Length: 228
Length: 228
Image (cartoon, rainbow over all chains, first blue to last red; front, side, top):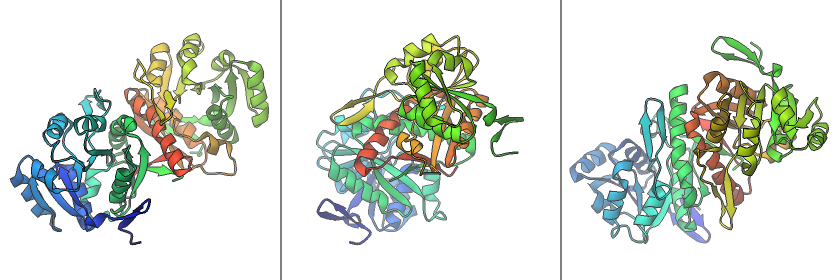
């Protein structure tokens, strides 16, 4: 088994055969993950409201990355990372319901507010951004992952090994296995199953704590899970 | 500066001069932390509803650990760890308000529910167990910490270095510094400032994810913060 293949209980999945679309791929988090995946040999499409801006970011990233508007990206990709600001999250996903049928959706959105005392978790009617996605995309395979990955570290290629874990949540075992494999494909990143989607809120909200840590320690904090 | 002293912005604090009381100290989490602190030379009092059971646990732990009922423990200790089940949390703290005036309170309680699909975070009117403690103990210095420490590993002294981080939350800088020092006093444990008390919910709730990880990977998972 090659290291870019993944055993999901009998079926070998070569993640380099997947096309990953990144909605909001011109933002720092989406762009950073796109860069690392492209370097790992995965086909990546940058999605954006503007196909032109998507194309510009794709050209900047190189490594065969292409750019389209969000709708075209959702239609063309096998796996779709949702990396848009929380404000436009629900509206965008509702508009892409048809394009995302049957696909693995990875939500990495953190619904956070900011005030003078720093950041804090916003209440979400559905429980979490990921559960909102699940409600809006009943025919998609919704997972949650990549919440705690520093965009600064992702885009800094002088850090070859990131040394972080990615919690992958979801109720569809095969989908979470594939998303874990997409994390494992990036050097120094490890995908760790992190529970069902109903436990996504605290994983999203923990980003507020990491922001507080970053401020206190002048760091770009991430997490690792011990004893696993 | 000795390693058991801690620089809190000018004031050196020797944590071995502190007496730590553990409410619910006969339970696995409280007992495990009591054991590790006692081994680190810190004076520990086990608290329990029953002074007799507290005394029995104290005798079992050795290393100078003593036992009292919860009220006596709260009155005698400088720093009080709250390690009781969520069900009795509010009632117990309300009853100890006078004993806890001016003291550092460390809440490590995780309000979780369990069903066939595993564990999940319970809603808490005040936002989190720690914020409930803050409401009930307006004259105490409430912090939140030690949520993710495996009781199994704590009580297993064949693991000399735990290799985990403890997120310490609170709005009182000196109090969080002292609690961090209490984490640092245990070999292989590190206290990391983790944000204000309003961000405690997700730290408590993350325990549900660690329980899911433990089940999937047959582990006793903990967390580490990277880049700090």
